[in-house]
Amino acid sequence: MWLWKKSWLAPTLVIIGMLIVWESATMILAMPTWLLPAPTIIAREIITSWSAFQQHFWATTSLAVIGFIVGVSIGLLLALVLHLCPRIRQSIYPILIMSQNIPIIVLAPLLVIWFGFGLFPKIIVITLVCFFPIVIATLAGLGQTNDDLLHYLRMSGASKKQIFLKLELPHSVPSILSGLKISATYSVMGAVISEWLGANRGIGLYMTLAQSSFRTDRVFVAIFFIMLVCMCFFGTILFLEHRVLKGFQKRGRS
Amino acid sequence: MAELAVKQLTKGFGNKCVLEDLTFSIDKGEFVSILGPSGSGKSTLFHLIGGLLQPDAGEISINKQQINGMTGQIGYMPQNPSLFPWRTVLDNVVLGQELHGKPNLALAMEMINKAGLSEMETTYPDELSGGMKQRVAFIRALLSPQQLLCLDEPFSALDEFTRQDMQNWLLTVWQAYRKSILFITHSIDEALYLSDRIIVLSTNPARIKAIFQPSFPHPRQQRLLLSDEFLSWKRKVTKAVRQA
Image (tube, rainbow over all chains, first blue to last red; front, top):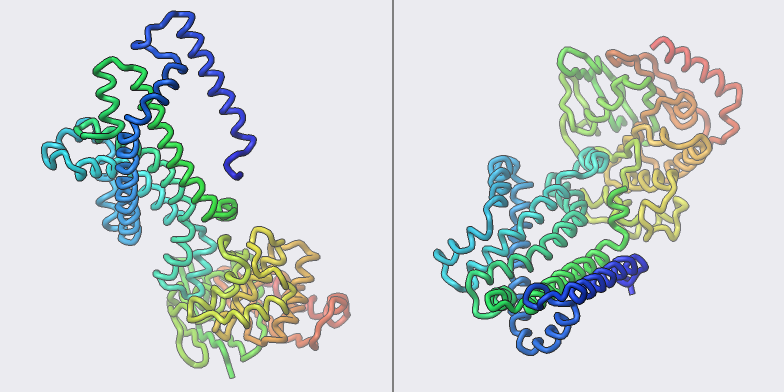
């Protein structure tokens, strides 16, 4: 298995070690469960509440996937436009950076006021957190091509379109994949935040309910599943990268 | 019939004149070397012929058609191989064709095999040695549809042994496919060994200093490098270069 390498052994051991410290700390300090539940209690809760939890799990996962796809599409499109029209790039780039300074937590309630509780405002939230890494990574990949290769193409009479298709686009593939990895993990966070606004299902909703009823163990269940979804997304992109690049990355940088 | 004709070509940047009044031509199937010290404006000359720069005065023409500032009129082999790392050897050699039409894969395979790169067509450039990369780069230029090839110090980064191998290899392949070649170099030995004609450039600004036509018979062999005739030519050319 390509995922199971020796490099996974060390982090796994560290995580197990941390769980043991956590477990013994709650025992020694006689920590009340509502303050900090022990890992074993959380694990039991994960198993017992799964049947009730799974609808939230799937709701958030599908929301994150949809948001991710929309965000990445917009990000890629925007990056292409900005790359091909340097004028637009100059005027839009600062706005892009500013868009990342808008606190999503503040923006989210506004979106509800404007667009209601449906899917649309949620997708906007996820898109806002997802598109930026893609735009930046794609622009970097398209812009920082090898000068020698560019010189060869220009001397050989390549058109602007050919330079884009034969050099810039393939050269940017590793960068785009790096951007995808970041966006994929962000999209889950975005989905959970968007569910805090108001949703009838989802890990975000579950988390708020658990928190307000002092079911700290359930809050940790939610955290556990958020991490799980994130890791699955990340793993999927990693797998894709592995398939697409097949040693390209090493070559692309040389 | 002249393949490439350069007439009274002048080019400067700002107040500095880089090329002054260059006039020369290359006949069909001829191998011409441009010899000059570094910084003698050789690259500028290539950029002009390649169409990336516009001359200040003068005319460049191929087959009597003026090509000032027109790109895509030459096949080009740069100083370093400039192979595309995500393309296999086969995909790399057909790139020149791709830019101007549909690639001819059968011909490409034939060339790869003849060039001593058999069974390498699916490997990626990073698995090739320096000499092999240059072979691929030369085949790419040779497969390009243009009749004139411009080679920009292609062997300057190779070690002496590889370079001699490559020179012999280049002559064999060129003999078989016979395109006109304009070859830039700063090695006198290389220029004498490879070319039919040598144009010596002066520096600041570059003018044509001398033209030599050694015309050693083909096929040329390594021992030519130590023959008396070769050495006497070398003395003459060296003298011309020194005065430059």
